[in-house]
Image (cartoon, rainbow, N blue to C red; front, side):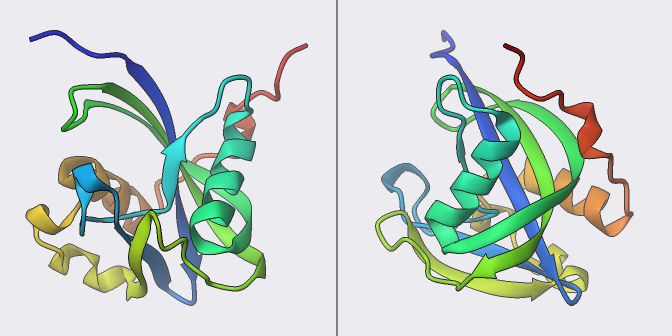
Length: 151
């Protein structure tokens, strides 16, 4: 088995009043799997800007990134090596309006209830559970870990 390619991905936990926004994927390869708003980093794009762009595209919300839970490296179900940068954010504007082509549903879930999702309901269960553990344990890191784009 050979690895297809390395993919840079950003994902974001939008937290409000003790709840996190989860989206249900509508893409063919991950249909009906719950996830955080996420997507690929485009060529030449700043990682922090990519996270905000993906949230806006998928949910209609504007966000301010506040922290990161870290960087996660795994092989996806489509055999890509994924380097995932996960962020924590707060809403700064916009209205929740999911992009129906890619998102089937969305819901706010109490942080204390996130473990109720079954593994088969989650896009990448092992990674999502690591992220949720970090969020619930308040193991967050400053955004200063990410340098701005170098010229």
